[in-house]
Amino acid sequence: MAKIERMHWAVSPLVYVITLTWNQCRDTLDCLASLHELTYPNFRILVVDNGSTDGTVDAITIQYPAVELLVNAQNLGFQGGFNAGIRYAYQHGAEFVLVMNNDTIVQPDMLNELMAYAGLPNVGMLSPKIYYFAEPNRIWSVGGDCHPITLEITHKGDNQIDIGQWEDVIERDFLVGCAMLITRRMLEEVGMFDTGFHPIYYEDTDVCVRARRAGLRLLLVPSAKMWHKVSASGGGSGSPRERYLMARHSVRYFRKYVRGWKWLIVIPYRLGSAVKTTFRLIKRGRASSVGAYWRGLRDGWRMSIVTTGERL
Image (cartoon, rainbow, N blue to C red):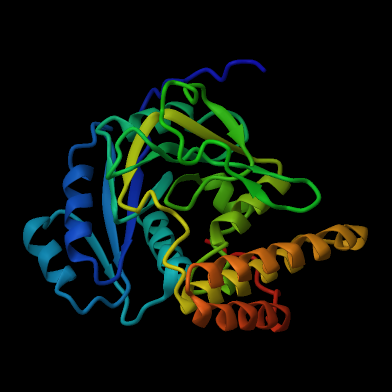
């Protein structure tokens, strides 16, 4: 595979760095502190607040008065919040947007490194190499591959200690929503996040599938680095709410994209996965989450899948 070469901008395009917050004041302030160390010459920071009640907005206004704020009256979820931020950014002259979690810390040259590949032909999105904050050399995400029939995403690099095995810029089928640099072409041709996955889960998988089906390239840029404040133990919280939403939106995702004979493979595959998830929850002592999980699967079949992705 040919090496993907970096490029140089004659004039640095304006990038809006957008982070979303809801009652995570400390994490958000830490994230903003790191964003202020970015060395890219032409960017603005926008915080989209999803109706926080913990003083986040006041704290940002006092400590970072130059940061732009978009305050929603209620929690619009991941998709609604970021879509509002993206729309605001392009109304204010953005040529690219970087959407990112607020519980992250970035390397100062991260945006420079992402932008060094953002103008290449047919690029839709780019992501950095993301590490665990608590274990700075353990990989949290380097994107993934999508199986052409089952549509399952495989994450071969997750949880690995970084010893230089992920150093080349490569094309991926999936980039995690924790950090996505998105091009204007991507948003105009493919659209923003599908609000049918409200409030969270599978929206990043969905937008990646849409981008790839539109012929756009998704690039992992390992020289761009970020650290994410999540536990390396993995598996999520396992709470009934999490299990419900994950199950519901997984079904919606497969209903949206599986067609014809592929169902003959996907249905038994997904049923086997559901059984394994059930036993895993029971083994972990989360019997209360089992019912929520199966309700999510049921409701996923009942959901509308009309929406695709809001347009700019």
